[in-house]
Length: 251
Image (tube, rainbow, N blue to C red; front, side, top):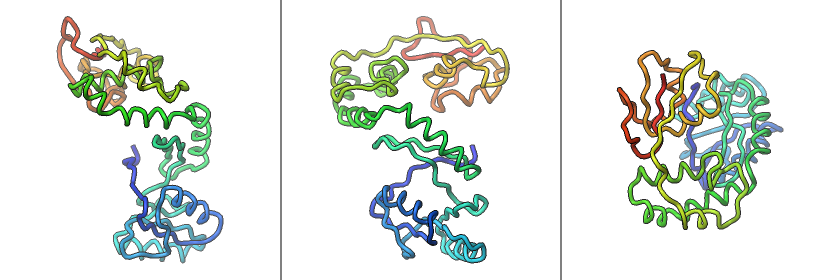
C-alpha cells in the first residue's frame, strides 16, 4: 500500500481551504458535503487543502501550514501531500473510496464511475438495516465469532443480503427471522503460480472470507496478503470435523 486509508469525521470540524478557481471550488463542494466547516484559516484546524495555481504561492502556503502541524492536501502536487482525497462512491452510510495515491485522479474517477453502476442505490438502506438490527443480532448470535460468520455468509455473493443485489427495506428483518449459524467447511486452494492474480474469483473470495488459514511453507507472502488480516494462521491439517466457519488450506 502507498498509504493507510482512514475515514475522518469532519462534521462541524474546521478545514482550511486555500486558493480560488475551479480546483478550489471542487474541493469546497466535497468538504461541504462531508459537513466540514470550510475556512481560510482557523487555530484549531488540523487538515488543509491547498488549491493554489501559482507555484511559489502554493509552496509558501504548504510550508506555513505544515510548520503549524496541519496535514496538507496539495492539489496536483502529490509529493507535497500528507494525505490525498479519493474518488468517492456515496451510498451513505456506505462510502467507497478509490485512491491512486495522487498518481492519477482520472484513473480513480474512471474506477469510481464503474462502481457507481455496480453498487445498488439502496445499499445504504441495507447498511442502516444491519445497524438497526445490532441488538437483535447479538441476541440471536451471542458469540461474536458466530455472529460475524452469520453476517459474512448473508452478505457473501449469492447470500440472503448480497450487497450487489437490490433488496427491500425489510431485507434484514426477513433474513434475521430464519438466520442460522453457517456450518463449518474446508476449502482447498492448489496454487498454479506465485502470482495472486492467477487465483480464481472463487479462491480470492475464500481467502477474503476465511476464519482460519492452513498454508504450506512455500506459499508466497503475496498470496497470503489476499487473506483476511484477522484470519487465524495455523499449521498442520485442519480439524475433522471442520471448526465453525470457513477454513482455507493453501497447498
